[in-house]
Image 1 (cartoon, one colour):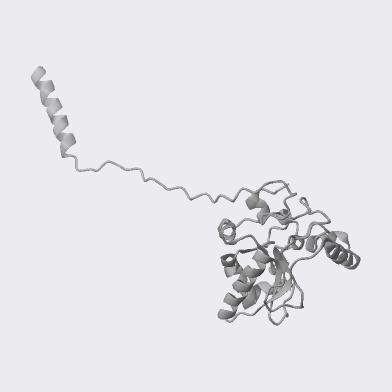
Image 2 (cartoon, one colour):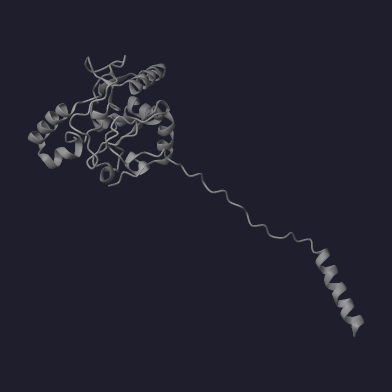
Length: 231
């Protein structure tokens, strides 16, 4: 009996050793890297911050005005348009890069004071009514232009100035593909009105710095989503 059991064990061991089938290996999947935004203080008294968010729920104070406003040396719709120094330098670099690609951009709007925004918004309300105006124009204090970091850009001809058709122009397409390389992001993307509070504006870009612009571009998120300013 013992001999039979021993033979069975030897047979099983032999069978196991002669099995050419390789053991199944569970593939290891590497998770996609998580894009981590730079921490931004929720204290909106820090209006001078590069990361300040101005929108309908986080307004700026009436007396806020950046102290480092300059006039960028670029083709513009009129004289005297200003941006904060860092944004102005980046805009000049971006316009030069576009020119090298045979793209002519025109600077249409930069910093606006609280009082200027008040006048503009009132004019739009008189023209289209408050509800409609509030979809495409900001109330005073709620405009990104007051931060000095926002810019409206047009094609050189101005034929598509402040029009959705700008997205289909070589200039609009160049900006959509390349603006992040110079620190600018499309601020009010298509299909995001319920988040940003404003209609799609293919001409409106916000300077946020090259590192952050790259992360925001890759995330596909708005500034509100990326930085958690959803309320």
